[in-house]
Each structure stands twice: as C-alpha cells, then as structure tokens.
Image (cartoon, rainbow, N blue to C red):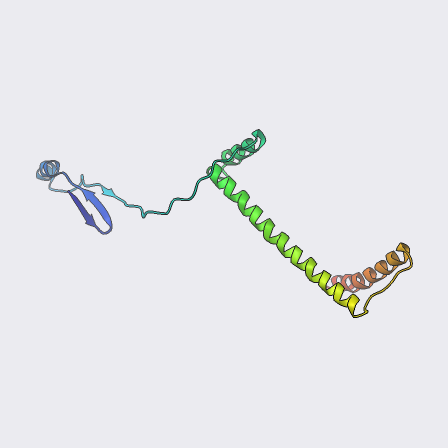
Length: 141
C-alpha cells in the first residue's frame, strides 16, 4: 500500500505494519521515498579521443576540478562557443573598419606616400600623438 504525505511517498505492508504497530505502536518502519521530477535526457555522443586527450580528461577528473568526462567536454565546448562569438565580433569590427576606409577613399579622404619609409614615419608620428596624451593622463593619476 502506498500513501503520500507532504510530497513523500510511504510504502506499507499490511501484514508487516500490523505486526510492528502492535508491538511498538509507531510507524517507524515507513521509510520516505523521495520522487525526483523527470528531466529530459540529454543527447549523448560517442567521441574518439587521442591518448593525449584521454589523459588530459582523466587528469582533470582525477584532480577534482570536474566530476566526470562529460563535464570536461562541456567546458571545452563552452570555450569553443565563446571563441566563435569573439571571432565573429572581431570579423564584424574589421568589416566595419574596411567599410569606413572605403567610404573615406571614395570621399577623397586619403593620403599617398612615396615610399614605405614615408609611410612608417607618418605612422610613427600619429602613434606618438595618440600615445603621448594617454601617457600624460596615466602619469597625472
């Protein structure tokens, strides 16, 4: 026989319960059985690892940092996912810079240099102009 009290289920045998309750007058033998809500099963994959990768997974689990190999692989996938997002953001930034440069060139806002040395001198000068105020601001703080 199964009863539910406060979210717990109790199993009771009529014969066993009758014998014990007559001896002690209590329900001490009715052990609670907690029910766990059903969770959708996660998809599983079989993966082939090199010896080096298997050793790394084992050492991370043995160190206590992860409880099992699945946790190690999920952490690795999170890193790849983060790397993909960062790469996408960098690519978008480069595309925006390329569009801005093309727009400047189309509008006639460009500089021509007679040699690579002239270009290097120009870049050094603008680098110094940008870094000098930033260095002065750091020193004043």
